[in-house]
Image 1 (cartoon, rainbow over the protein chains, first blue to last red):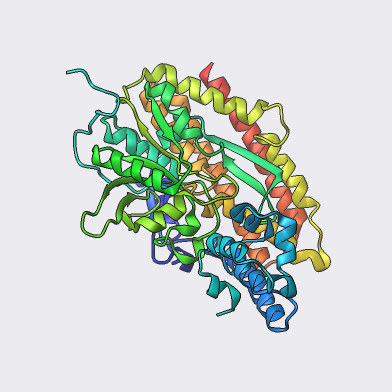
Image 2: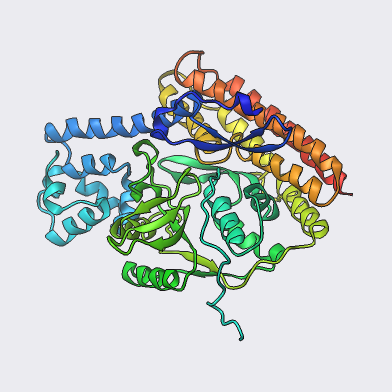
Length: 131
Length: 342
């Protein structure tokens, strides 16, 4: 790639930052050229973000319908899944899965709620409701 | 006076430099700070960090691990031998101990490499904050007034700041590749190596990894294995899931600070520099070929992105064909790179 071919398409996911790309400059040497982003890159980043948002929105619907606990919503909202939440909180995955059921989540001990809140970076009262 | 282990000082204040990749950016900055000019591509090449790996049994967010480079910490470790550098690494049980140690090192005038989770770094753009635990930044000071850490995050154009609680959170994130507060700094000054020795040795190691790793998931055979996985992706109502897999490949190749073309351009830059350092013009010609291989990685990325957005019909067979072509090109390329050193 030549320096003048480095994409400057204004990828929104970069938040106004430029990223360093390596390309062949006018002097014939390969070096850093700052890039405002490439559409192909933006497409795959947004694809990943939208998938996480879709999971959170689905969970939001289930929580409102009373078939899932608020924990599931906050888990996806924090861009996690059961595996990751289990690793971060140190709570077995099968228990995390159980705690996604609203009737079981409603009876959770404060100590467990505190571990989930800590793992998700929020307060316990925030964890129990959806925003 | 005898220098004690923690007393090496830099000759000038820290200077931030924009880089493509976090680990090569941090390590080249550390080496430069302590007196040896070293480019980011040279850090990548000398530590033999270019690679390809497809590890379907390690899942990140439900998707297999794909990497265009060696595992995290390969550059930190790999620069020690060629540059006669001794890196100290420390991890901590608690965030409080980790922060106290960082402060002590900064007070001592050191610059300190840190492993962090991107998700908990507030200065990152929202859409790039995923749970990736092996992001490297360099701490070079602390604001006396509000306690913010002054960070050189190589993938940003300018130095950044981070509040102490946020940095603690990012350093002590848990999960896959948990940093456990990892910090690292050099124990001595790097020395200028005999380029005629260290460069061929580093290139030979990369050739070995790409062509002769005894596991069919690493190097050229890993590329072929990914091609096969893409070919077998289900279509029909499973298309969204299949597209996530393809998009994930492209993200690892382009979005995750690689300098484009999955580090291939950066390695080409290394080869060009290597050609000059050890007077082997053949390496310069091979650098040009590797740029073209990088270009075809970008063509794969573009084809995949167009299919993800339905501008082209989703055709796993075509993407697999492009990947197979990359495997064949790299097999030929690294074979000739090896012969060029003979």
